[in-house]
Image (cartoon, rainbow, N blue to C red; front, side):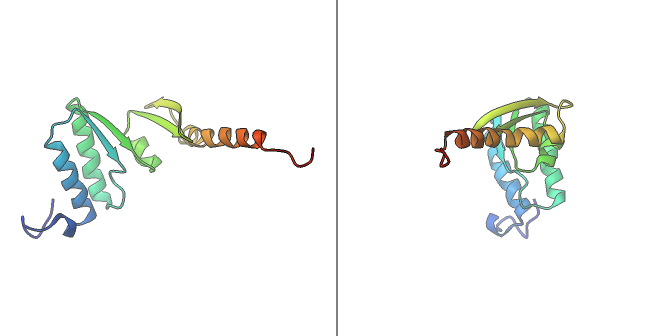
Length: 128
């Protein structure tokens, strides 16, 4: 973490350094399961790869890492398994090497397509 001094407030740090401080605080608790929600949103590429490296190291240590991200490329890069939720439902789970970007995107929209079809079928018809 780069700072002007040890007394510098976390809120004055760059976005990437703020993320690292938050992650460091949680790592001090030595949790066995860690949930990262958008861990690299709004930070520079260098800080992203630092965080990716940290996630990989935690996994090597036997920690369970759950990453929630809207960045599909990020998920495809760092995950061993991707579970796709759509419209509040688990649509599918893919293991590394058994997914394509097209499959993941199709799964991501599948729940909404099904929901919209159900809503369409349940709507009263005006032409009857």
